Image (cartoon, rainbow, N blue to C red):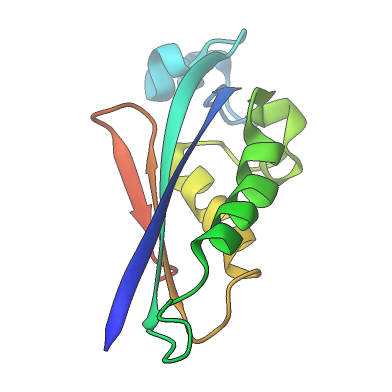
Length: 136
């Protein structure tokens, strides 16, 4: 029997959506106000779900405290109150769209979760705009 455990977290970060190889006009046409050269910020909400078999000894899929620590170390400590374009190496040459951010987060967490578990990350950029990545 498989069960999904989930942990919610959040971080605040600034970013600018643009491509270095495009003109300002083309970036503005594609990304609009998100292309602001002075950046803009979001209060990101994150839900990390781990799916696996329930351990017969502990009754856990995995210890939620361990999942909480992984999220803090891999996401909150590295992204919170940062400029994603400037302060986070993964976005040096990757446009920090919600889609790209969720994949980066998934990859960072995936390396810390046992292979037998499935992982899903949901990232809310705003209360109404969110993306989901399951590693597919």
